[in-house]
Length: 242
Image 1 (cartoon, rainbow, N blue to C red):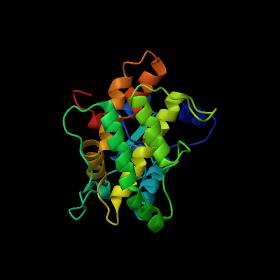
Image 2 (tube, helix red, strand yellow):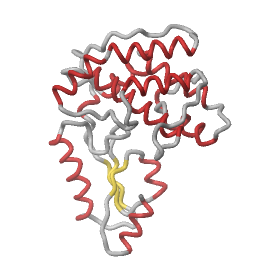
Image 3 (cartoon, one colour):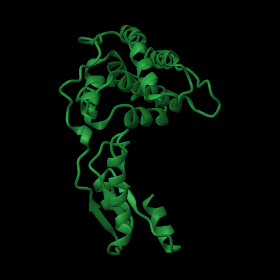
């Protein structure tokens, strides 16, 4: 995107970028960029907070009225209001796997967990009339089964001609994560860290994704190995034995 921004500037079109990874932006040096201290995937801040998001967008657009580069990089001074833990939030009851258990057992626990979370996720949709689940274009149960099959060495082909098997696997994992996090949010507004810590450390689904990543990293399929290494578990949640 930084290279594209330079090209557009050469054609007379002013640009401004929003940066989530400051060192990367310092290296790529776009003409103008606003660094924001938010988690990946939320460049303008938390969802369902339009007033805050407008402040981020306006701060970015103000760079167009300021000094010229060749590179302008400024920081957004406000933290994500959802970064503060909600003391009233209680995570859903889940069966946390203990110790080293067989992959088939963990896969079964994951599929049962997804079923138990169904009423909570239905409530999420009823109250908000939306969901981010759906990348894989499968039911959430089918996503869980697809991931479970890969965990047990059954390399399943993608059901869609426009998606490779590795990308299908990635999208199923993304849908499972979104499903669990939406189900767990409830009526309160837990911080992103609260939700992430719960998912990766206290659910069978998070443990299953960790195990699958560890298994498939050794795959001879370079593309598959790269996808599971880089896009399955956030860097901050990777443990030494992962």
